[in-house]
Image (cartoon, rainbow, N blue to C red; front, side, top):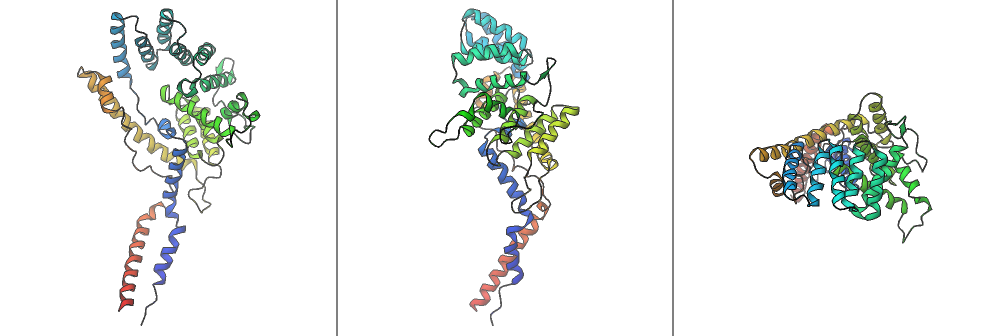
Amino acid sequence: MRRPFPVLALAAVLGLAASPALACLWDYDTLQMERRQFPDALELITGRFLRHGEAFYRWRIEDRTARLAKTPEDLALHDDLAVAYDKVGESRKAIEIMLAKAKLRAGLYETEANLGTFYIHAGDYEQGLVHIGRAIQINPEAHFGREIYQKLLVEYVLTKREDGELVLPMRRTEGRNRGHEGFADFVLERRKVMEKEPVEGEDPWAIEMAAALKGVLGMMRFGHHDSPVLLEALGDLLLAGKGEGGKRLACRAYLKAALETQGGVRAAYRARATASLDMQTVHGGTTETLTVQQVEQTLREELEAAEAWYAQVLADEQRWIERGENPETKFDEKYYGVAPPDEPAAPAEPSAGGSKTLIIVGLVVLVLLNLSVFLMRRRR
């Protein structure tokens, strides 16, 4: 006598497709898709990318100062020394070094680009714009056109000052261009994107937003990645793309900006983070809304992992310096050419069903066992 295939086992197999426990997989995949669409964004938001610490730049200041005493005409050493001072927060000293370099040889792109950045870091936006403009004139394609968007961002910042002081968040009204946000609106208007005709099927809107995003990510990598201004601009651009991609990353950018500020500004950034999750669900096939608290919990874990990883980089640099070794050479040997280790499987935004994963695995095993017994009996 043939026994029917176990009904409960079949129901368990079919029920897996709609199980809320699969929310974790969907959340992880969604974030991974956003990361492929916007490479480096999460790493720059969390600080999990290769960069030097203050001890390294203090060492470089001593090293370059000594080397310049022997070869004062070496222009590259001036750049190294100035950037090192800027990295430890002494932007005015960095400006002095660049101005001295300009007297040795004027009209260099590197000098103008560095001066523009140093003046901006020192809070002198107008003077920074002058030098960024000169750098663009000398080489508009340098750094993939990053200075173009640096200039636009500074111009945007200048429109957001009140009584000479920048007020955060910069975006305080709804975007006008099909719901797009703040800095993205500003870029689209200044670059006259709406007046451009598509070329060979390419969308001028998408091309411009991708270029602006690349520019802001470059500013974060080589400037201050934890700047609320850059984080807000990044969030704006991530939301400006057509389609749903980038909302989780934008939420993280605004939440990180909130962590870097206080009081009403922090609350406003958190509100922006909440708004960026509009129409986002915990996982596909359900209507369970993804909350800012869930993303916040995940971001906290990502920040902790990034901090632990970066602490190792700082420890390496400190050890090399204490041993009298060249930290530049040692850093190159250990880190350059090798990407930071993969993050542990990124914790997914929490979901109500995530804790049932083990139960589902058990059900799958039981289904397979039942199927095996059924087939054996059928052969007999």
